Image (tube, rainbow, N blue to C red; front, side, top):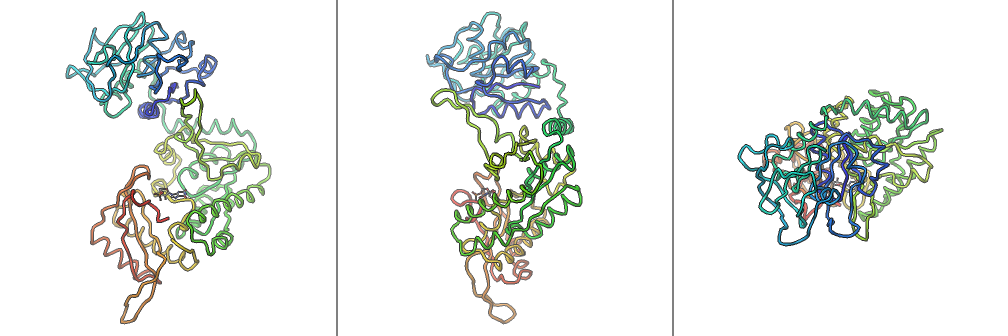
Length: 513
Ligand code: XMP
């Protein structure tokens, strides 16, 4: 495996992505955790030093562990990583003097070929992306320059005899078009075969789970989402009946969702499952509540109580499994007020493990979202399940603006099911990031079959997005919208009007509340 020492660059995660794409297993660790002992224990086959926001010229700024220089494995320094490497090995780094470089630059070769630049200079020069204020003004003894750019005379340097390589630019970003090639060259010379696959990960993860939990019992909260589902199935493969899943139906799920989840896990996968229908509890607590934040808090608090109640019934449980992903656990290096480490936590059962004296099992904590999907495929999870649109924890509560009633929820479930069916039938589901119906807090007058109606209005929404932070409205054809309107009104009793939500995010949010 490969170790990435993080000096706090915004794009360190991209280095990991590039390497994973090359089927090399790597981990990111913050510089202030990587000391000589860590290095020995981790035993990396190669090390990459990331970029970072600090200045090597500042007293007390971050350094790579001294043991690295005699560790005997290939090292690649990037930007800040390059600068600290130069300085630690006897070169010089300076600030200012008008040699800062931000953005596009072109590197030209010097002093013959360098293995990590194989395939780079077909056009005599190659575009790279720079982002640095400081620059190396004297390279360390033993190093040779292999590439220069107008403002970085030492854009690429190397000490081939020691397998040390250093670049001033960022090969991991999109604007360094041949960056992936550089990583490929680097891992090849480090002796990686590029054989890290999901199949391999699956075996490795199963063994790690067995080692961690031994013969103890594990509880896993199932939401029906991809992360918790993959976690459960992986655990089940590892420890079989030592796993019990808890699925809480809060009465705010989509049509048939609870039954589908139960069927899949209990019948198809034979996983021990407590399916708790607590819809009365939640819906009673939500009676008369119309404020969106009060809805969220009510549901969140009850969820924890209910989950704990069921978890307590599972005798001898020592572990709680969670579908935490890699982006949530990468320890980010913060430079405000000296080195400190912040760890993001995102748990829908936050605080529970401590309260219940449970230890955590997080078998996805090394994976990115698309890798979790790949693992899901590897575990035989149906494609339709893996590609499902995101669904919020508070469920239909936030798609029912104003007061929630059982009548409104039932209408909403039907309308949403027809709408999603319509999207699937037209082959649009995978093009859309998220789509759903909402029931509006009003009734409108209509005329159907010569009679007057006074029924609910439904709105339909579909957006494209990458991460849910911003979103654009999906451009349905008028024909599709017309057909959908007709189907919803014909097939769902209690609806006589359909609105199409045209709002992007911003200014809107994806959900109505
Ligand atoms: P918004 O509405 O904030 O939604 O634009 C962005 C994404 O987050 C989901 N969402 C939630 N997920 N609990 C969740 O687990 C929530 O309270 C919540 N609110 C919004 C939403 O479905 C969308 O994918």
